[in-house]
Image 1 (cartoon, rainbow, N blue to C red):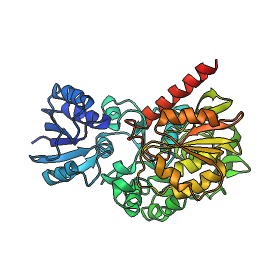
Image 2: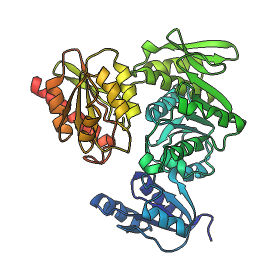
Image 3: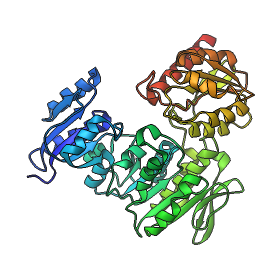
Amino acid sequence: MSALGDILVLGLGSSGEAAASYCASLLGTEVDSVTAADSGADDALRERATRLEALGVRVHVGVDRLDGEYETTIASPGIPPHAPLMVSARGVSQRVVSEIEFAWERSTVPWVAITGTNGKTTTTALVAHLMTEGGVAARPVGNIGPPAITAVLKGGPDVLVAEVSSFQLALTQRFHPRVAVVLNITPDHVDWHGSLESYVADKSRILANLDADDVAVIDVDDEGSARLVEAALQRGARVVRVSREELPGGGAGLVGGVLTLSTSSGPVELVSADELLIRGPHNVSNALAAAAAAHAMGVGITALRCGLRCFEPIEHRLEPVGEACGAEWFNDSKATNPDAVLKALAAFGDRPLVLLLGGRNKNNDMRPLAHAAAQRALSVVCFGEAGTEIAQAFETQPGAGVFTVAGLADAVAQASELAVPGGAVVLSPACASFDEFSNYEQRGRAFKDLVARLECEES
C-alpha cells in the first residue's frame, strides 16, 4: 500500500476539486486510488466530474451513500456533520479530515491561521499584505484565494496565511499554525454545528496544537474570543492580546486614536486609525490583529506602517461600489450574520443609512439586530426568503421605516427611492445567499451591477 492509500474526497466544490486533483497527481506513488463523491448533480458538478475522471479519479454524483474502504476522507466544508453523505463516509473511512488539515499536513512552510465569526477575510488579506510589504513571500489561502492544497501543490511562498472557518476546524486533529488569530466568536452557523457550544468548541480547535514556539493573537474586547486566552496559555503559547480599549502588555491596542504595539522596548506607534482605508471600529480591531500577527512573523515596524496605510477594502466587505440617488452605496454581502451587520452599522458614524437585509436565515435570532438597526438606520429594506421574518422582528421597534420586497433587485429599486443626499445605502444582509444566489460573492456582484445601472440611468 502507498503512503496515503485510498483517498475519498467529499464534495466537488472548489476545495474538493482541488483536493481530488492533488491526490490524482500522486496516483501510483503515494496514492493507490482517488474517489470523489457529491450528493448534488447539477451541470457544474458534472463538468468537474468530467475533469477529474480524466485525471483518473472515480467520481460519483447524486449519491448519499458510499461503499468501499478508505484510509482518508477529505471533506469539503459545506457538508454538515449530519448529512447522509458525511455519515456514510465516516462508516467507510479510517479518518475524516478537512481540506485545510490535509493541506497543512502536506505543506513544508509555516502557517498563519485566522478565524472568527466576522473579519476573517479582511484580516487574512491584510496579514498577507503586511508580510509582502515586509519582504516575506506570503500567500492568502483557504476561504480567500486558492484552496490551500492548490497553494501547496504550486509551492513558492515562504508562509501560507489561511482564513479558516469553523466548518474546516471541526475536522482537524493535528492542524498546527505558527501563529493563530482569533478575532471574535458570536452566534453563527448553529444550523451546521448543532449548537452554539459546538460552534465555539470547533472555533477553539485553532489553538489545540499550539506550543511554546507559537503565538496566539486574541481580541480580548470580544467576550467570546477573550475566553480562549486561558486555553492558549495552558498550551504554552505566547498570547498577544488585542484591544481597542487599552494597550495590553505585550499586545496591540489603540492609544489616543493610534494603533500601537507594546514591545520589550516600550510602546511603538504604527498609524492613526483615521489613516486606515478600511472603515469602522471593527476594522481597527482587524488591523491591530493583523499587525500583531505579521509582527510575530518577523515583519518590521516600517513595513507595518506602510502596509496599514495602503491596504484597501476588499470585495464584499463594506466595499464602496458607487454613488446614485445622492447617496454612496456599499457592498457588504459577506455580512451573513447579525453580528457582522452590527459592525457595519458602527462604521458610518451618524450618516443617514438605508440598510438592505435578507436572504436565507441561518437560525439566528434577528430581534437584537432589529433593535439596533431601528435606532440607527433611516430605512430598512427586507428581502428574500427571510424578508418577512426579518420585518416581523422590527414590529415592536420604533424608528426606521421598514419595507418588505421579493428579491435583491426589488430591494435596490426600493432603496433608490429611500436614499437621501449625503447618506449611504448598505447591503449588509445578515443572511446566507442561497435562496437567490450560489454564494455571497454572486450576490455582491449582482448588487454592484444593479448599482451601476442606477448610475447609468442618472448620467
